[in-house]
Amino acid sequence: MITDSEFHRVVHYVKQTTGIDLSEKRVLINGRLENYILRNGYNGFDDYMAKVEHEPAGKEARNLINALTTNHTYFMREFEHMEFLRQEVLPKLKVKEAARKDLRIWSAASSTGEEPYTIAMVLQDFFGLEHGWDTKVLATDISTKVLQHAQRGKYLAEQIEPLPEKWRRKFFEKLNEEEYQVKQELRDEVIFRQFNLMNRLPFKRPFHVVFLRNVMIYFDDETKLQLLRKIYDFMEPGGYLFIGTTEALNRKGTAFKYVEPSIYQK
Image 1: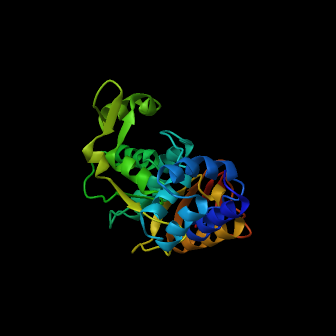
Image 2 (image 1 turned 90 degrees about the vertical axis):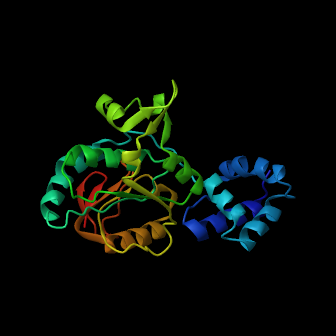
Image 3 (image 1 turned 135 degrees about the vertical axis):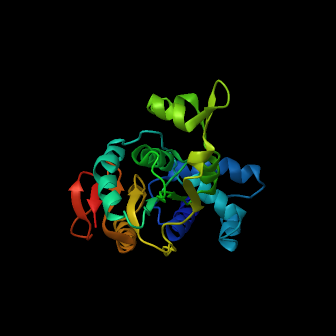
């Protein structure tokens, strides 16, 4: 069982490197790390953390983040956002960007890929057979483990069941009785990259739309504000920010304008 000092050491490291606050997650930390530490020959949490801290870009540091970041997601989650994207945002952007034909959409906590693939399906549905538009979706996550899963694009039949039947037929191929895979044409429309939201944004051009859903619940207030300022500064004027439906922004602390619950605009 993890001791108080070991627990605080893990919490401090994760907060400093990812911004995620696990100070109320003692059971989660112990449950997800204890067996791994013993199984891999470490003498305890302190021995393990010494390795992590000594090699912050090494294997154990990646394993720690993969183990402790929560990655629960599913197709059609908060689908009202996708309806708003299709009905309100894309028609405006189609006019605004008619000359450049360039849309920049970022799924900033993409997890196992359900969100960015759903966005890509909405884009394909909206633009249809129109050619010349660059609508590739940037999908990032701090966890290399979930990104590997997302890039494969393989999901159980029950996972894709909530999707409209025409999307299942159009965008997925059946591998066997239990498993389906996103078709290559759609996988090519999503660019997956490992990225820590606490780092400086390395992107070259500002975004029209950012999905930052169900991730800020793991940050304290100051970390949230710092992240929101960075994202605001790296969005096109009039760009849209989508957050989780159970989340809300402190309007006094951010320059984003309220549009409707969980949707904001620069």
